[in-house]
Image (cartoon, rainbow, N blue to C red):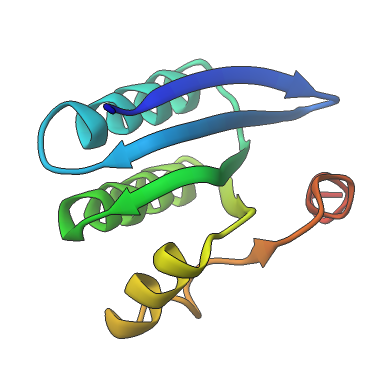
Amino acid sequence: MSVKLNTRQVGDVTVIDISGRVTLGEGSSAIREAMRDLTAKGNKKILLNLSGVSYIDSTGIGELVAGFTSAANAGGTVKLLGVTKHVKDVLQISRLYTVFEAHDDEANAVGSFA
């Protein structure tokens, strides 16, 4: 199953619900394009909901980092929601887990942007 994205607004926070496999090719480029479009439109608060991600490879992690960096350069913030065990393991192995602020509860995550 390839990656599927659903973008929605919760107050002034843009939530991208991601599901499927985030791997080299379609999956990672879809996330990159979505985050690029959002930051270009001035969305500064982006929450990536990863609870539906079954698998992520190093390319997918790279896209998360690239999105985080481009948002930060534009004065924005990217946070993670619902990090699955597999995604957390990959982030810890790559020593990137401490770069991202991660939340388990959507209401708390949205509130943390205030």
